[in-house]
Amino acid sequence: MAMDNGTMEVRDVVIVGAGAAGSWAAWRAAGEGVEDVLLLEKTPRLGTKILASGGTRCNLTTTLGPDEAADLFGTSGGRFLRRAFRILPPQKLREYFHELGVPTLAAPLEKVFPQSGQAKDVRDALLNAVHMTGVEMRLDTQVVSIVPVTDASHSWRVELAGGGTIGVKRLVLATGGQSYAGTGTTGDGYPWLRKLGLGFVEPAPALAPIKSDEKWVHELSGNSLQDVELRLVNAKGKELGRRRRPLLFTHAGVSGPGAMDLSGIIARTKQDGGAAKIAGWCLRADLLPDVSREELREVLIAVAALPGAPLLVKGIPIVLAQRFPLLELPSKRILHEVFAEAGLSARSGHQALTKSARHDLIEAFKGLQIPVSGTLGYDKAEVTSGGLALRAVDPGTCRVRGQEELWVIGELLDVDGPIGGLNFQSAFATGEACALDLAQSSST
Image 1: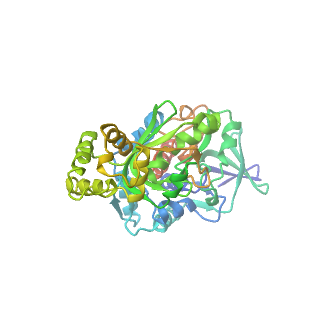
Image 2 (image 1 turned 30 degrees about the vertical axis):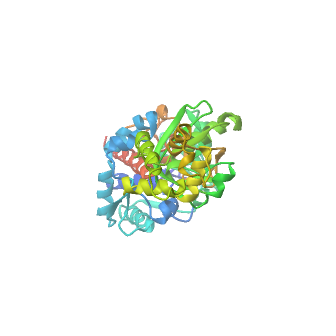
Image 3 (image 1 turned 90 degrees about the vertical axis):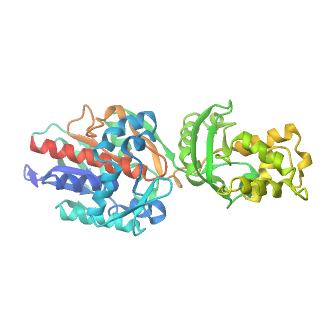
């Protein structure tokens, strides 16, 4: 620590935000030899959002390889993150946590959790690592602004709530987005970036449940399917996104990874153009993604040959179970809505399956239409879409181009991926790229 003119505290590296990205960057930078690292956090503890993630289990990364994982962030996000994910691949991240005393295990849908099933173990491991490497951490310390300066002793002035000021040689911003506001992520870094005149993408909630105004959707609340292929389409039928993940019907619409992964497209479009922009949009749910249309046609024909001529709502599950014994079958309530979309009723018998009705029923199974009207917004969003435009950042180091000694990492960047540990992987990997660059610039 140094003092400027005997009054202002001057620090080499200050990291603002002790979430996943900031705490990782602080630990790794100090571990790589950066001697003076100060970590500032406005809340009373490090890693609050980590504690709340994954149903308090913390899905901390993915079993996918680095390039596969990066590709799930879309074209621009994937291109940007590929270098950071190669610097810190998901498997290497798991090895680091194992060294920190947190062994991990793989779960379905490419997820990775701490073996204990406790998010607290992940947070505590990072907290201990930060302390062990000599990082100074100040909690309950809120930054209110950052100011670039031209001073021989420092590049930035960090102004604190209550009037304190710190001169900073190298500044790292890791304040996160504005989802899970109760954990402290309230978008603090956005006005700082705007004021600097950097490229900025207005934030929108992502990974949020989707709203539907349809009564039948609400009436299915509590029904779920573990293997559904969802396509988000606009009023003209153009596909805007596709995910094959679990789906849950709720009192407000639909949730689960499949729906939430597509929610950011809805939220951003509605935010940019109003409700009219998403009028006529819907999710088309393929309830039997492993059963082809031709196979389903054969199932419906076979139903007619069942002894006792059972109703379709009973006969179709019987034949599907016979032909596809491992298949998850829709609940009877969901089947009722499939029949309704095809113009049939729950009391329909096989005699109702004319050639035209059979076609309509197949299409309902392969694309049940769920109208959408928006999302549940930031209150229920897991991450934030938008932030610092990626063109303003070097992807290998997370240095901000054209700014003296400034790095931006984690969710404050305009990157957001689907559910499955990918957003934590992004936070840790951008923190690693930043930390290594800080260490490299310290030695030159």
